Image 1 (cartoon, rainbow, N blue to C red):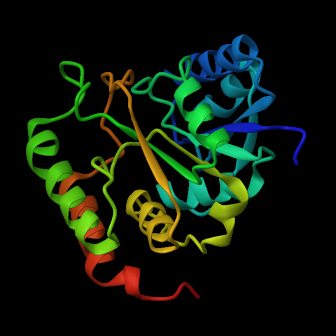
Image 2 (image 1 turned 90 degrees about the vertical axis):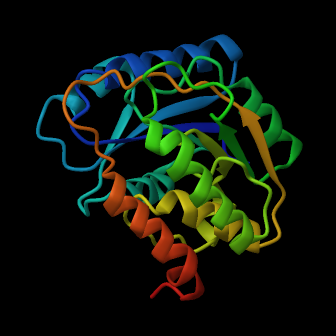
Image 3 (image 1 turned 60 degrees about the horizontal axis):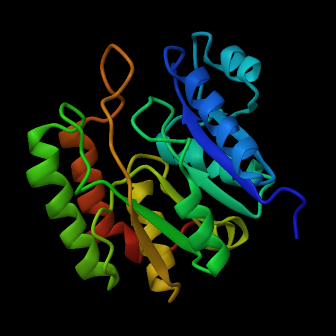
Amino acid sequence: MSEIELTILMPCLNEEQTVAQCVRLARQFLEGSGVSGEVLIADNGSTDNSASLAKEAGARVVDIAERGYGNALIGGINAAHGKYIIMGDCDMSYDFLHLDGFVEKLREGYPLVMGCRLDNIAKGAMPFSHRYIGVPVLSFLGRIRFHTKVRDFHCGLRGFDSEKARALGLCCGGMEFATDIIGKFALSGAKIAEIPVTLSPDGRSGKPHLRTIRDGLRHIRYIFFDSRKKCK
């Protein structure tokens, strides 16, 4: 078993407004819970001070050259030292201070532990079209395609066994990575747990990285077509 039990992994692209606070909260969780762990930032080409601020706050930073949400996370998964990984966006939308439920389920033997935001969405944290159309519809399609009961396919806070994740052959470089990892765990026969989490408003100013129509279509294409293909 790895000496490090948990890697808290955050993909990062120009998050200087929030990344340091997210790292500090994650480190506070590790120190307060007694879990042996690290905070890992997968920097995906930031041109601001994100990387240096993350290091100052106590994170290990790895540079992932190939752009894309999925590419950043795949690179981070491959670089992680922990037996388990909990991933989450470093924009203050997720609570890194209270990860006990994820650790508990991972220790119980669940290879994948999904957060579910649907009952705990703070005001202003999710657009109407995402909350009542995009997330429910895409999650429904994912449940049918992958024969799973996961309610919230797009929650960015999730935990998994690192070795088992690496063995899945994850290859989606964009936002559809969120569906890819659930689908591959589900089709492998893995038990999947789902626990409630709170979604808070994005702490950054400026445009979000998510592009509703483009990324929604990428999820649909993956569910109906790309999930049936083998990665090269």
